[in-house]
Length: 79
Image 1: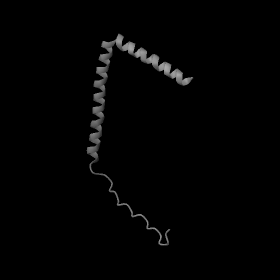
Image 2: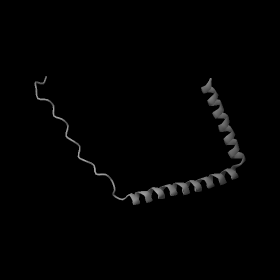
Image 3: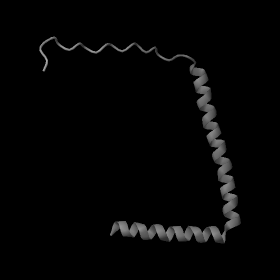
Image 4: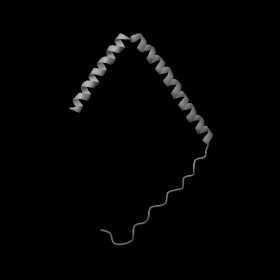
């Protein structure tokens, strides 16, 4: 019953959303334009902070030691 109810609620909300977009299309377009600009600013700020932190870190990466060779199999009869 819960799955059917969630599908029905999803369809009702989609219908309300489409109706709202049609009814208030100029306002929706203004909102979408504003949201795109705000998202671009936030993503740009995030990339800028990441780049600055990478520049400040420099080459302080820890050196990686060579992996140890695998242990040899014991000598003895095989098969």
